[in-house]
Amino acid sequence: MNSRIENIIEKLDELEQIYQENKGIILTEYDLQCLVFHKIYDLFNHNQKTFDYHITGSPLHSEINFFDENGKLFYRPDITIIEPENYSIIHSISDISIKNERLIYKPTSSKEFEFGGNSIIIELKFCKNKNGIKIISEYEADLDKIKKIKRLVERDRNSKVYGLVVIFNKTDKKNRRFQEFINRDEDDIKIKYYTGKFEA
Image (tube, rainbow, N blue to C red; front, side, top):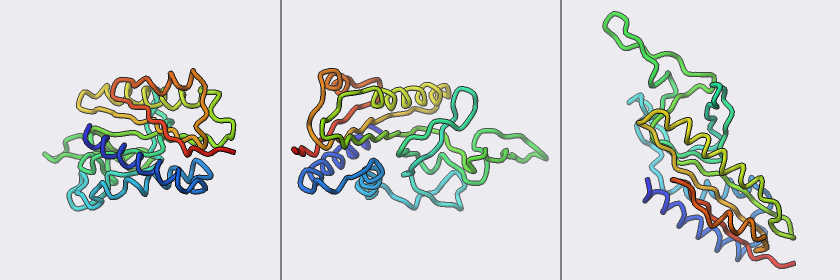
């Protein structure tokens, strides 16, 4: 997983260079999400066997919902990477019963697929303000979201969550508190900062 994260970071570094050369390429956070998805797409084989061997799938997905503490589909990271062998679009992958000596899987939840195992979560933020980054609460919220998902998922000792908080700033203006924030990596969660170096 760590080598995969390093490969993703290399692609993000490349995207920063592209952004600095083409400052109008990112206008919205959705632009950033599309560009990151496109940039890392070729890092993956998108025709892998899923939990159901006759169905293939991709490790790379956007806007996948995770359950919260109350079993509700609540947390939705921008990009999630999961191993196809650990997800099913047909049924549950863990809730089973035995009937007539056969394993019977329970139906999927309302999201119509189930997954488990290790995952990488990428949360994206784009600051387009010409005055730069002054309030950091929304960036801290993304870090907190990954930490909450990590804590919930890792209750299953066979699953691990790795995270990336990726911040693109149109300018390179940022306050001291934000600088302290991007200098602290959490357990298995990295914070990466990029700038377009735009000057008005």
